[in-house]
Image (cartoon, rainbow, N blue to C red; front, side):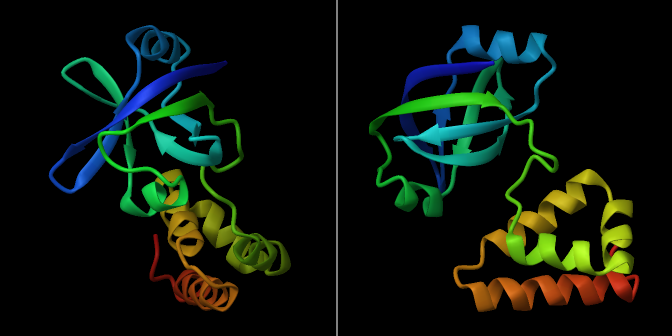
Length: 151
C-alpha cells in the first residue's frame, strides 16, 4: 500500500508533525499497519510510527528531519507513505549489521531483545553523523549486549 498526499507541517511546542488524511489512516488501520516508511519533500525513506490523537493520524517530524528535507514548520510538502516491510522497521546502519553478522554472540543477544529495543539501538546508531561515531556507538552497544546490560 502506497499513498501520496500534500501535508502541512504543524508545530506544537517543540514537536512538528504532519496530519495524515483520514482515508489513508483508515486504510492503514484496516491493514493493521503501525509502522510506515515516509518520503517528505521527495526525500527519504524515513521510518516512522503511525500516531493518532483524538482520532486524527499524524507523523512526527524531528528538527533533524526538517533540515534533511529542507522544510520549515507551517509549510506544505508532498508526502508519500507506505507500510514498512523492512526487517527491523528502522534504519539498518551498515556498521551494526556487519557487526552482528560477524559476531554470533552479539547477533544472538541483539535478536533476543524486544523489537522495540532493537529499533532503539538501530535509531541511536543511525543518528550518529560520521562513520567513526556510528562504529563507536555500535561497539558500545555490542559491549553492553555481551555484558548483559541490555535485556
